[in-house]
Image (cartoon, rainbow, N blue to C red):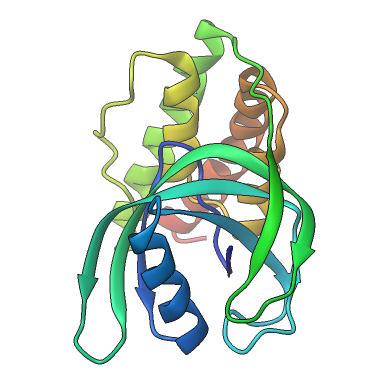
Length: 198
């Protein structure tokens, strides 16, 4: 398990610089086995040194790229898979471990709402670019599959970790779309105000 200050969504990509010794050990273990690990959001505390409070629902990740940096550190690229729930945390020596269960995904959403969400997402990303802030390209194509596209939109949406966690925890694509629509509507309003000099 790799607790972080960020959320990884299914189908999302996450670059990761691994420098803490216990996570260097975790990386070596994962690369020698199935290249999988769990990502959970740290609710309170720090990514470094332990003693953090973690949310129980996260994402199973697969290491798709691993580059050793020569001094024990690693650069990894992870891709998100199934959502997982921590059933029980295990002793953390030599690195964080947990017993997990896969969270069932409820499929099906609203194709009309998809268009609304995509439109809001593109406006938000265009505003971010106009402000000179880092963001995904507003012209990025989303997958034809509604479930996958909703996860991609969540990955690109300019929201903070707490809102990202709410999106991850949504029980269905439909509920995730509704949350995204509300979050992006608010974000577009704020960004438009900033672009207008407010």
